[in-house]
Structures are given as structure tokens and as C-alpha cells.
Length: 196
Image (cartoon, rainbow, N blue to C red; front, side, top):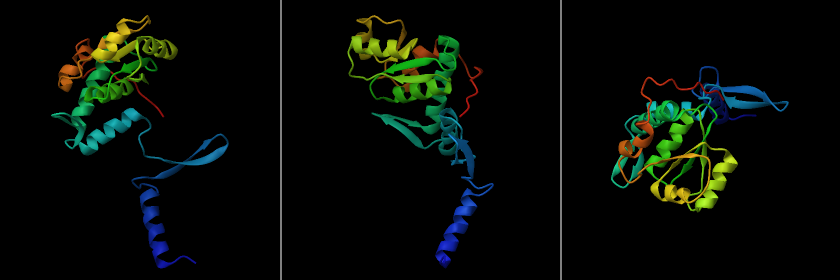
């Protein structure tokens, strides 16, 4: 028999996960089985990014050296990257965009921008040499590679069929992503509708 505490916990759980609750639990059939899922959660990573940027706004999200970026700043920069990828570099939904960079604020913003643009971010190992990077590009069928100067130099020594855009990740975020954003795109760029 449930205790008073058990009943209170169940009531709280039902309030949170029941109809209209902040984490309403639904059911979906997959592989012949009914599985639970959060019914009102964003259906894709691009929507999660927008949700957390709106929820946390000015709170610090990324820190690299002296540069501190808020959730809102990261989202806006990623949105600019997405527009530049779509209008400036012709990225379409489902296109593979390789990222060959060391960890940096620009890496994170670029990754999020690829997702927002509807692309498939293909992450290449930062310590790979030119031929290994080229093999990763060929295997993934990436048509565009976004690289930091060190990886771009390695790629210049190898044969592959992708266009390489080099970002100077030592600069502040707006300058670092300029090779993408200056190619085209604006706040009016239509982003693809993504589904789960």
C-alpha cells in the first residue's frame, strides 16, 4: 500500500508529466512497441538551440580566453552562420558540412549553424593529417569543409573534392565566422523546417 509520501510524489509527477504539464509524457509506436516521449519537447536540435537561447538569454554559455558569449549571442552567431551557409555557400537540407577545427567558440557556433541550416555536421578529428582529413571528407561526401588555419593547411596538401572555408578562430566570434557570414545571407534568409 502506498504511503502518504508515495501519493504526494505520484501527484507531483502527474502534475509535471500530465496533460499541459511542462514535461508532458506522450506515447509513440516504434518497432512495434509503445515508447514514452516528452510530447512538448522541441523535435530537433535546432529547435533546442533556439529554446535554450530564449530561456537563458544573457547567461554565459561559452568561454574561451577573454571572450564570454551568452546563450543569445551564440544563437545569433549560429543563425548568421546558417544564413551564410544557405545563401552564401549553397548548403541545402541534408548536405554534409565537415568541420575540421580545434575546440573553440567558433567550432561550437559553426556546429550549431550547420544544424540550424539543416545540414549534417560531419566532425573530422583535429589531429588527422591531410590524407586522413581528405579520406574523412570523401567517405562522408562532404562538399564543404570549415577549418581552422592549421587543418586548412593540412587539407591543402591533400586531394579531396570539397570547398574549404578557413576561419581564424583566434579572433572574436564575429570576425572568426566572417568568411561564412560575408559570403551571403541575412536575417531574412529562410531556414529549413526541420522535423524529428
